Length: 165
Length: 225
Image (tube, rainbow over all chains, first blue to last red; front, side):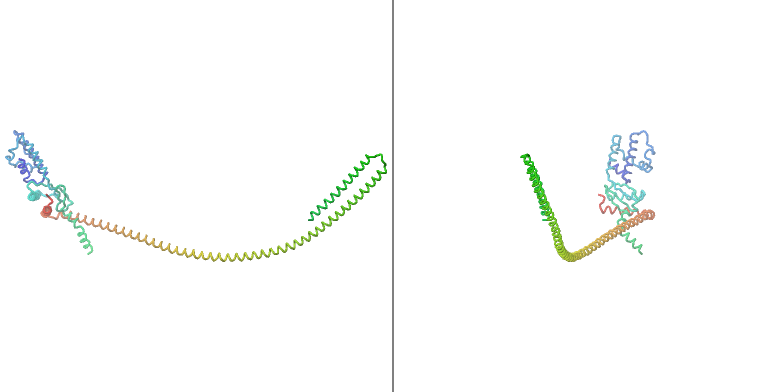
């Protein structure tokens, strides 16, 4: 059941923190639904984020038929711990990417490393362009800034030649 | 010698005086004895004896006076002789003294001349020795001065070279540091310029392509395991 829920949550979510938020929202929604059967939960109670609300409302209720009062908390706890156990790829970008590009990058990563691969995006304007990545505590810089630092002497010699002439 | 004679004469005079006095005393004693023995005897015998005694006494006195006179004469003679002898002796002594003085003086003059000559010789020898020593000292001084000047020159040159070397090193270090600072400035200006320009000029597609390029490189390097 956890795997099924994991697939549902990670279906179009590539960022680990977003995945955990989805788990929380979905749990809250299902808890309200399971324990308050007489009252239908209002749309406004699902999430402050309208996209999250739309996502929850668009989910097929049949997918959660196996979740009962007895196992709702344990199911979502297991789901949460499974997601937390996933080591994300830290991606450092000099600017914020639109959602579409984030999805493209997420899909590429899942194609390369598995269907449950997650990432986290951080901002670092000093990188100028390109990105830097960090995985399991190891950092690697592939940005333009790093390339400038690498080619510093060549750049300086070119600059000096330019100044001479 | 004259003093012994004089004392002899004095002794003689004194002995004569003593003889006369003893004679007088003896006669006086005899007279008393005669008187005591026989006062009763006759005044003639007493007068005779008295006159005889007086005559003897007079003669003794005269003899004593003559002796005294002779002694005085002798004394005067002896003293005169002594004076003459003294004068002669004085003259002889004076002559001898003069001779001795002259001799001594001449010997002293000779001695002084000899001493003077010796002194001159010694002085000459000392001057030579001093001259030689002075020459040796000057030679040594010249050598030492030359050595000292040479070593001082070497030390000065060495220290100046060291100073120059350290100054050059300092300049080089400063130059290197300044060039490094300038290089850093150039790079940071370049980075800042690229940050400002690329953020506006690079299209999204190119930016995403750079990210894909980085992810592909990471995959090739097997960065994500």
